[in-house]
Image (cartoon, rainbow, N blue to C red):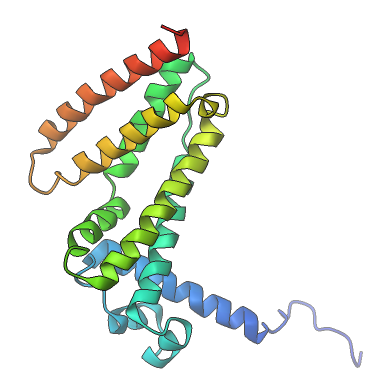
Length: 210
């Protein structure tokens, strides 16, 4: 029948949808390059090739290296938060849940995506792009972790002491994670286990009002 829509034919995407898809492909390629090749190996040409776009198309969406680096790190922070949100904490006493939460967060902090943040921290001493990106990435990471903590421990976040405890935990994790390339993993794990035991003890005392 004339004028009828052909069954099974997908509507053509709008220009805005195509641009959004291309931009996401570039972001995904940027994140993949950061994880696989590190900050030093991140180049606009390599990202464009991985995304399957021309360098000119990449420059249209991200005019310079700093712009797509910042966007990629924001995407990494969101992905880290998604991993935290997927934590399956058992319906156990609060202290056990807190310990389980620390265990799972530690596993995330040791993963490949967090190594990107560590590399960026080292590069920021001598690289203006890295320094600017690190500032934004740190804010994004802190924001995403804070939101996750609110979701996981909605009652505890009202207590300023609990927030300090979470900050101490994440700062310790980030510091120990940076030692992984130069320190045997069993030593890093022992140090974390000692810190975690103390953090859980502090949390237990706080919840009991000791």
